[in-house]
Length: 60
Image (cartoon, rainbow, N blue to C red; front, side, top):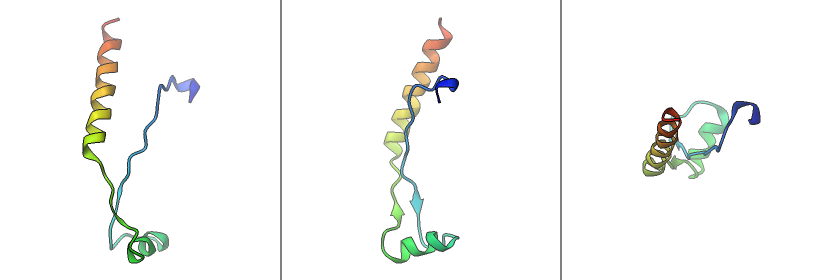
């Protein structure tokens, strides 16, 4: 990542519901461990932070 000038990375939860394709993806909801784990507020906050950083870079 150093070669890409990456400052940070973030992983956000996703959504895995019934009807998903793939052997493992079908088992997870069946066993009650699937669901919607997306956090739209956290995604929006991260996007706003990235936008602020990019805006600051353009004023240099």
